[in-house]
Amino acid sequence: MMPKGALDQERAEPGAPWAGSQVLLFFSLFFLIQFLAAQMALSPTDTVEGEPPALTEGTGLDSSDLNTADLNTADPNPTDSVPEENSPEPAAPVLTPEQARPLFLTLALGNLVLILLILLYTALWQKRQPDSPSLLLGKEGTVFGCLKSGVLACLAWLPLHLLIALLWGGLLQALGHEAVPQQAVSLFLNALQDNQSLLKYLIMVNVVVMAPWVEELLFRGLLFRWLLGYRSVLASAILSGVFFGVIHDALTSIVPIACLGVALAWLYHRTGSLLTSIVFHTVFNAIMTILMLFGSKMMGVAE
Image (cartoon, rainbow, N blue to C red; front, side):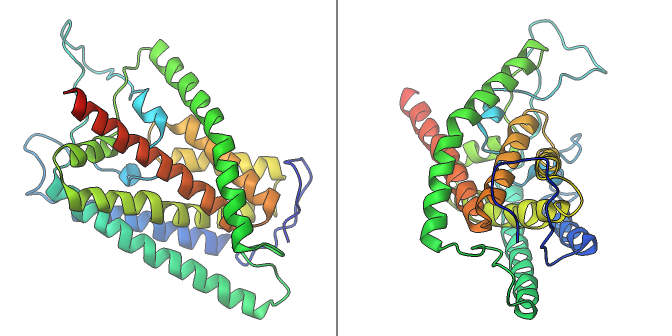
């Protein structure tokens, strides 16, 4: 059982149903799903002439893609070319709706399979270890308690998250990085503006439903819990949080998302319930999505 309490330097017992090989296996499946989704989205006939494929493993829209930092920061300026004076920096190429739909459909289906595999493996392990606490509820947790704790923790975190995003965005801008949304954010905004209903709902399913489950199972339920057997709680939270930020593959959001990952690890350690972290993550993504929807409607009214 994971100890409760604040993040400290004491070594924690792992209490996890998996070793490093299982963690590596499930993460390999996660990245394989990202790769297959990219292949479904981009084919030689789909790529714009003269443009390289713009899709990477971190393109799937999730907690980082709808992060407020994405709207206030930018990718680094190119160093191998000098833009013309007063000419705007070209934005990253955006997938067409025909390319984006199979991408998000593949991500949704693939992540659903991965979620079920992890839950099945955990259930089989806990059946052989009946005294071990539940992965989702902990030792004495309840569904209602997890829902309440997750919502309240998310609402408490939001102001701090916005502050971190603003500070990081301001630092990047001070270093000369112009504010440019991530490609996934542009896809979502384009889907709203062009009334692409199917694409809009596919993105929302990935953001609000699939991403919180698959990312919490992987980064907190597997990676963080496994690291507890070898590092302190604080070190495990930071390591898993930094990796959580890095895999989103965007300088614009790496710090806010890494901090979010540390907060989610702390919440999981504090409560012993992964469902609490899943609820936190779900509410966070839902709020960011609602802000995007509201902002898009306000822009439409202003125009």
